[in-house]
Amino acid sequence: MHLVPWWYYHCTGVDMHSNKKFQTKEQHLHRLQEGVSFGDGEDYNPAEYIKVAREKAMEWRDMYYQHSGSNTQVDLESKGQNPDISGIPANNLAPSAEARTDSGKSSPSEDDSNSGRKEYSIDNLEKDYWNIVETQSQSVIVEYGNDVDAQAFGSGFPSSERGRCIESATIDVDKVDLPEPKFGTDDFYKETWWNLNNIPCAPDSILRHIKVGINGINVPWMYYGSLFSTFCWHNEDNYLYSINYHHWGAPKQWYGVPGNKKDAEGLEKVFKNYLSMKMRDVPDLLHHITTMFSPRLLQQGGVPVYKIVQNPGEFVVTFPRAFHGGFSYGPNVGEAVNFATHDWIHHGADANERYRSFARPAVFSHDRLTFTMANHLKEQKAYNTCRLLVAELQRVIDEEMRLRNKLLEAGVRDLSGEICLPANRLDQLDEESADYDDKRLCHACKHVCFFSCVACECSQSKVSCLRHSHYMCRCPPERKYMMIWSQEDEMSKTLEAAKTFCEKLNIDLTKNAHDLSAPQVHELLEIAPGVNEDLRRQKSKTLDLSSPSPPKYPLMAANSSSVRTNALIRPKGDATTITTQAAATDPGANEAKRQKLDEMATPKLSDVDTSDGDSSGIGETTM
Image (cartoon, helix red, strand yellow):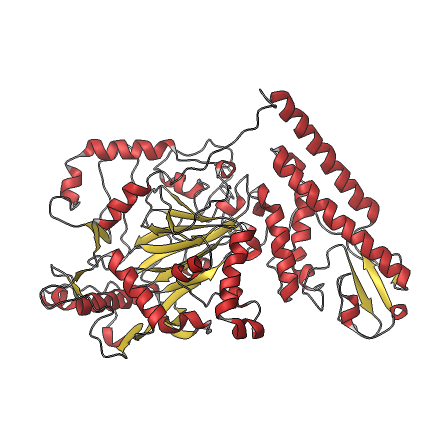
């Protein structure tokens, strides 16, 4: 899990005045450790949800925390101001959260006194959250607007005019071959690969070969959060990378576990220890994303846990198989999507095997994407990642031919010469290919039978992969037959071409190496750069709920004197409070910051560090 330095962009595509409604999920925080499925919450349009979420956050603050100023709904209405940006009467809005103290306590913790109350800060709210989750001292229900369709409700990023995203409405042919737009311009935000609509199709992302839109994978999902709304422990579909951008609102608390085999399996073991009966009935419980355990329990099980706070304007990147979870500190709007660099291939193979063990369909065929990558060998730039591709090709071809020969020897008939089957398309995965793959799922393990399948005369609909033909029916092998889409010579040619190309990369690497005898060792830093500074900065901040909605302000170019306002987190103390007036008096500081951002405007996915972290306890990761 990695926090990327911010550049700020307004939610240009989200229509906060839209009457279109999305459904929320009702989360019982005091039952998050039980793995209970979430029920359906109320339906809201974006403005309704943010309004109610803000009201509930202020209720919690006013009940348990000290605060100053006139930020409450009552204060605003008494001054004749209407905090409701949509103009919808409050009595038309369903409540999004309720809290009841079962133990008779007047606050989520016992350390308040009559002389003064706690500050409404991140540290204290984090304690409140885990007190509710772990002790069940209160019954707290919140509503979370997760997995909201960006196509229906609008992405927070603008659409590319150069065909860089799956859902490009129009392509301006006059702009396709132009140089990259300058940072800070409108075109920059449309075309940058940091735009979450574009990043799945970036040059170094292999998801660019998937030409059909898959919500949440290569088409972003929006997330509307409220105080304590939770994204439970999970890793990404097919063990992909993910990137999450915080558009507006209160910070998000993230927890992460490294994606290496030892730590990922360690987290799963903790879940099995605490929920053994539940996971016996629901073995893929972790894929349901309904369970939240505290870092304390994971650490007790020997699992390293890291945490970060994500503020508006910051990206969080998660790595293959890395478990992550967290919650919001108040109303906010976020967006997330997946991508995959070339080193992902072996992680994808691990995910594919796991899905088969649970009979869980994958979001796309791993075998198809592997052979599609092999059909675009010129995109392989590094010997190490090309070697991973060759190894995966070798593995799947060896298994395929071994099982084919075994079944044919057992009496299964090969009818590939008698049945006309369409050839597998290897240049891309389009909608027609995806639909065809859905029709050839193994009856037992739900694996896409990409190279071949086994069918039986007893059924017109069932097929199985070569591993599980004996699960399909009790008929003898003589009644079963094999359908083959990829012949052995075709697969062998693909493998040989990949080996030849990989060897060429190795020769080029050897030719360019300065000293092959000295192994290159990259020392892991004891603590990530900026952690101590970030800890100090976070501790000096209290949450501010005065901003009622996502504002409409752009990030200006480097020569602009404009500054961003309406932050939902601000430093405490009059001397350090950042206001529009104070910031405007120091244009030099703003200029320096924007020049620094301009330097890192167009990063490459291949520059992302994919090394695993390691720690014996909770670590802090930041910019």
